[in-house]
Image 1 (cartoon, rainbow, N blue to C red):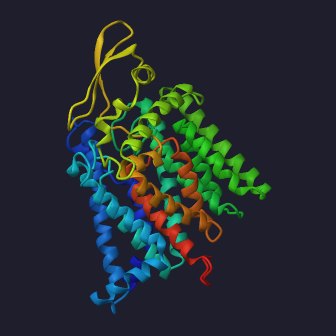
Image 2: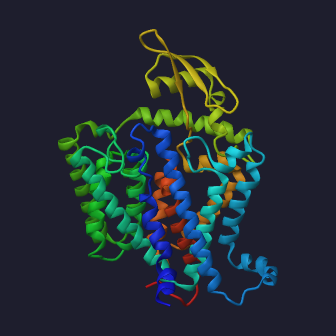
Image 3: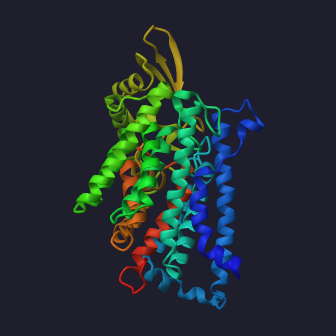
Length: 453
């Protein structure tokens, strides 16, 4: 009885907390492994662990309703009308699978793009399963969203400590990484690690609407780690999330002071201990590069607006959505070359660009994994505008939940502000969908007598 009660209460908080740390010790098994091995094997570990939690979660959900029979399926439409967030999520998952069969390479669209980017329809369907089970559990246990929020905060503090250790030791704690790329911990690059810290800080904003002795130390630790990443978009995102505290002037001042102190400490640590990791906080090149990426993404969406391209499909054709001049400008900013001499687009392969370098020599460049660096554009490219509307519908329920229980909602809102210039990698998606399920369940509880205290 104790073990079942424990699982009901802590299964999904544990999943949300450990998901971001999951990895496969590639370099211990194969010291000569390359990046593709690291990413694809890390993806498989997360997929297997997600499947395990889904199995346990489904078993717990089934045991909570022993009276259910197959004949009760006739009430499914009524249940979905009462819980439109679940209907949206299920439709999003099913639409991802259906549209995969309309992609140029259906198998790749189902299983995911090159390097195991976790964008396949089957993995998306598994994450929808996480969303639904968290949602259903939260309806019976209104304290689950609070446990989820604190689980992610604890995870963020541990991640922050590991990031600090990487800077102090000048080496990765999980993978051998060049000091200039630190900190990364379990993420593919420091920018995505910064995104996770933004999610955690957003959750802490939700708790800090009221004075909290626990949240302030956590905020300081995560702010220090965020400073280590030198990520400009993250600073803008937390600035946006900080506005949630408007009206609570004392809290605004305390939070701003803590964050500024933490960021300054992080910047100072990098400058002192790992100067190779320093980055300029103002860089127009990144903004201009994003412009050309977004322009190509918009062209792709307009070509397949309804169904999207599916995982790994747009990666093979993106150069054709930029003019010759735009492609030259993109290559100059991305690689520092003089111009693009030719582009080779071949079926089932990443595009190859023949470029002229500044010294007149010719080189070959390629982009194995292409992302729009905007979560909403990426979803539209993968699942079409129909999929994007479903996702936006789920975010609407996040906004509805903000008054009932701010932490999960603020975490998601702040993180999606960050995602306007980035995308969510599979390294965080399990945690993201668990938090999303909890927030949407809170929105469903709004107006009921049950309170989250």
